Image (cartoon, rainbow, N blue to C red; front, side, top):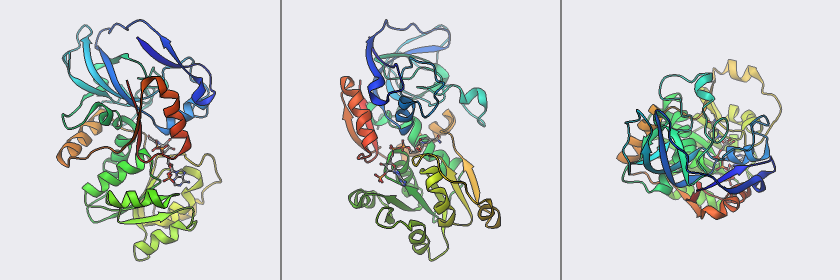
Length: 336
Ligand SMILES: NC(=O)c1ccc[n+]([C@@H]2O[C@H](COP(=O)([O-])OP(=O)(O)OC[C@H]3O[C@@H](n4cnc5c(N)ncnc54)[C@H](OP(=O)(O)O)[C@@H]3O)[C@@H](O)[C@H]2O)c1
């Protein structure tokens, strides 16, 4: 079978396509024939060594994929051969709060990822794929969608009628838009592109702000809420956008701290946080239980993940370059 491995932290060119024997599932494990995988900004950072320069190389990239069960290892019984499955981002985070043990089971980093034709995964780290989703669509969910779900509903605690602001039109942000819309939230989307904002409107964005032509986008966000501020910000820019997010959010509101798109930046004034009672809530993807709750909502609301483009397996490096270009809207997928 074929597998990609990252051999050096040189960006997309560090991915090499290689031959490997079919792996054998051990106790509690399952052999999965992968049919699709999807890319996250994290995969680009990992390829460049900026996510964690101490990851052991070579590593098999990507946390997100979907495929068919081929064979159960000894004692594995949650799935049967032929079942359609996708993987949870952290194989060991089944339920309950996050801890260091669970956090160290993230695919495509600490443990081998899914950019291969055949992969062995622990059965506890798999979820069944609903019939309503293709393999390409299911492959978009483990990281970006679960993170958006977690940030809004598991720790964000948003309620129908509230307003959220989500940054950009990449994977996490577009899922936040789709889930927010389905849950009766008023969703404001920012983007560097008017054409992408137009597309966000067709998906149900109630407000749109171009953060390039409106650099004071936090003021525009306040204006859209009658001067009050939004109830929750899906914070994807990180250090570079957080100071403005603190001004865009209402007093007593929440910032779901998710992304680092802008890289390192200057410090944040803690006085803003305390005198306005703002809750800064870190979000690190999510558990399998969150993933399963999210799948029920996806099925009930007939939500279709927005797939920007599907690249063939032998052009996976081009897929990563496409993500790097930032020209995508939603998710970039690799067919396997
Ligand atoms: N904490 C977690 O568990 C977790 C999970 C998933 C992702 N993340 C993080 O969340 C971020 C987004 O990930 P992703 O996979 O969704 O990325 P992505 O699909 O690559 O999205 C990139 C998009 O973000 C937008 N963007 C870039 N700089 C921006 C800025 N200064 N302000 C607003 N938007 C900006 C751009 O949208 P436009 O082209 O529309 O401007 C760009 O196309 C990354 O930092 C990632 O590491 C964290």
